[in-house]
Image (cartoon, rainbow, N blue to C red; front, side):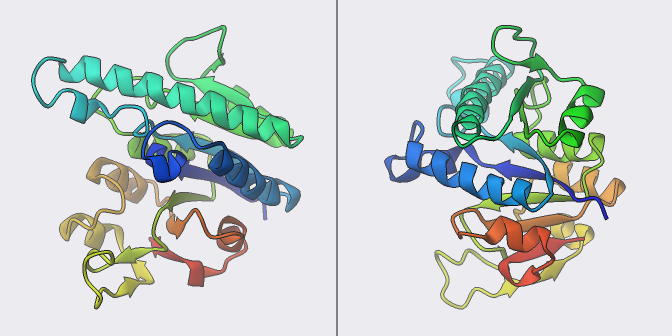
Length: 235
């Protein structure tokens, strides 16, 4: 069976302990984890957030910056991160392509779904940046949208925790990991796997979502190989 996955990384995760900017050690770790998927014969696409640089919603909180402008600033931040991930992948011998939802000819290709699929079929890693190209949509929604457009088998949300819990595991010692939840449960109980728009889009298109810890070595490969012990599944 063809394996094609889209991995969503948060921008905040790229910042490391500094809390802002880009930690090159994390870039190297991400690149090595992606290479393990490619070496396994998996076609890989990536969407990355921009929260390590700026978040549109936060930028617009005090009213000085309009929400739409804040969101466009956030989209540009994802392009910066996308360029960084492309360089990290290229540095270890992979053949990445950066596609942007906002037209930037000197930085990356425009997003064209047929071209993206062709890159994947040739073994190239495709990095999608610029969100959806529209304000009011998160990079979670962009990841779900792109996963559906390229006909991925699974969407992997690579984050700082090893799955979905019934409460914040950083605040509550008795938090219980949920191995599997339904789209409806995630929506009705407001479990913060992804934003509601992303979950609804995944539900409508029956796109399975795996939530795993991006900092666990081998976790991405384990998820792709069918090991559900390292993640929570939303199906």
